[in-house]
Image (tube, rainbow, N blue to C red; front, side, top):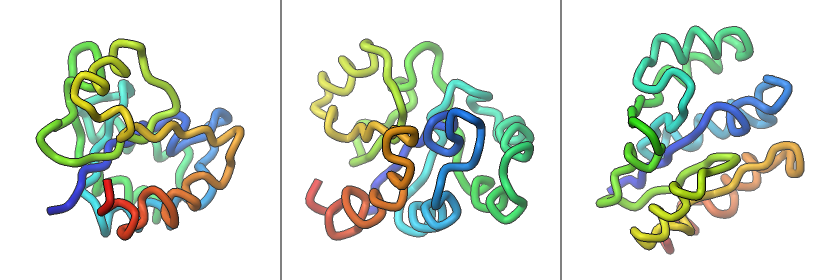
Length: 141
């Protein structure tokens, strides 16, 4: 069974200067081929057309084709409301609310959160593919 990956837009797909993250196309191809991928973003949640419209300002057309394959989620307050805790997952986000961290801890899934910091580690998406998200490594979690 494929693991789920939940990803944010700001700080994961786009850097602080709203530039595409380094290695984004390669990263998106990798996760889309190996995981069930969902948006977990407060930006246009549950509205895929709005997400694509927003990202079209910053991403190349071939990258947009990749992000079109990502499934949407929706939630009321905390992003954790959209996570399926019955399945193994990774959550890539640059920051979480304390309430979201607490929910992860309550479900014994705090280590499923991967803190993405593209400012401090610009090549983080590339290193995730060969480390934490590699299929060999991911099967151990």
